[in-house]
Image (cartoon, rainbow, N blue to C red; front, side):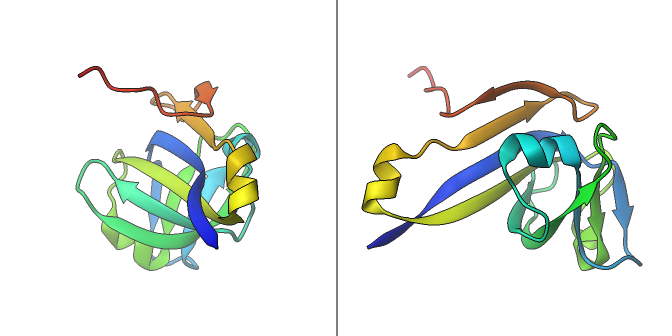
Length: 126
């Protein structure tokens, strides 16, 4: 049996550009792609914290250190510059792989600079 697990996420990134008349995708600062292991042209889910919109597109590499998170093409209609988003990628694994797997979780500041990383989501206090 294969399971689909969270492979990586960029948490609370700020949308810097929204380009309707550009080939569809999400351009992501190359440093964030490297930190998460998300590859160029890999399918990603984008969840807009600011408006609740959720959609799927693919990642393209923006310049390293640019801080760019640009939603392009039809995806541009789902966001506004300044919105906070979560960008997530998933992977299909068999049960043996799942036992060894840890996701790459990347947290950023308002300029989309990495503040810290983790391989698990902290437990919420009850």
